[in-house]
Length: 169
Image 1 (cartoon, rainbow, N blue to C red):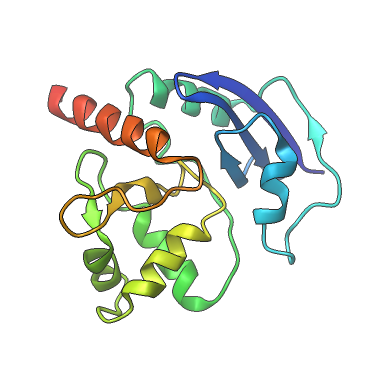
Image 2 (image 1 turned 120 degrees about the horizontal axis):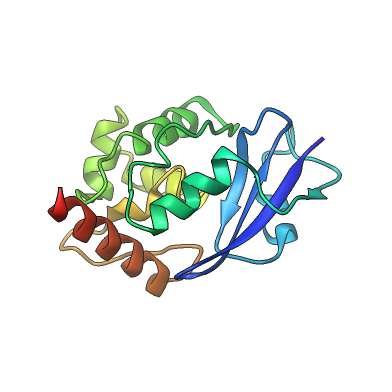
């Protein structure tokens, strides 16, 4: 069984899809779970989604993050499938500290392929688990936002939110 729940955040509705073990398969700022299901790799993509009012630790982590506990999402398990580079890059993204965004070039270097800047950008673009795999922490050289599936205003809010929380610590 695969479940989803939607909760309100300062950016708008946030929906998370999880498996029976509460492992995140996809997430993003949408009220429509069908916006997320196609982002899940075909090998693990559910054929049915079952609604829940909340998803326990996952829902609490999303709420805590948006309330300022920016590390609340760090221990939530995520499952994504793709090629070796993308899976490794997504793991690297989870280690980028909140409040310390990096460039696509730096992300490519951290991922072990300094020349693969486009590959790094592709890892961000193909990330199904927004927030939990924080692709919003990757910027263009010079600090320009670049792209973000959920919109540049959401990316700016996330970066400002993390910067403010990191500064308070």
